[in-house]
Image (tube, rainbow, N blue to C red; front, top):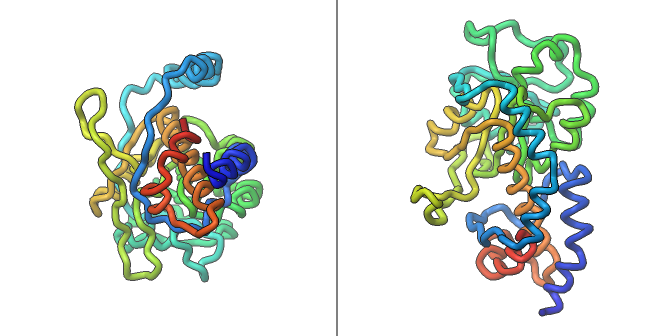
Length: 292
């Protein structure tokens, strides 16, 4: 085993565990974001199966899902929406991407806004995309005005990739990580560096699944009340987006968080800087060993 690989394993417990499970919601940055390749197959070892069956959380989540009585995903249409940002003077890549994917009628507001519009383009019900930078999310949720509290069911939260990271610890703290909330997983499209660019799909087909259907990696995902609206917004630009119930979306989110952490860690400890595409091309075995 090479010296670099040993360094990866030494840093694994601290780097990935701390970043993903103890609130690593500041995103991952520093070594590029232009990778499409996802490698590795899940292990079927006895220890892995034992770990799965000994965790009662999965059973509890499935029982909660059955209690909702829902059989199909609610697919509300896209339309004019509110996009909440930390500062309207600074267009983050996520805010810029959401504006460019919209129909030109979205309203961008700072998180300090007290009152929400009663209607947008005649709609009294509309998505409120919370594109607040992850480091400011806890402060935003802790100081929500009464007008916002009444519209919590319409809020849509972002996770995944270097711009959104893993925000589940923050959402759990305030009671927002549950079936009734809308959450979307980004990272499956490019985020333009200027106002003119349109996001592009960067998911990739990696073979066939057990049913003989195309199997994709790097897709976006959405759950909750406004899953259909987000799906439609991306579909217009040929960007793939899965929709599912919260328990399914949560699995997609943690898979993405794991690979975000592993890819960045493998690239970050090398003597020569490498980006994510190079990690996928030359160091996929190291990532696969860490993931599975």
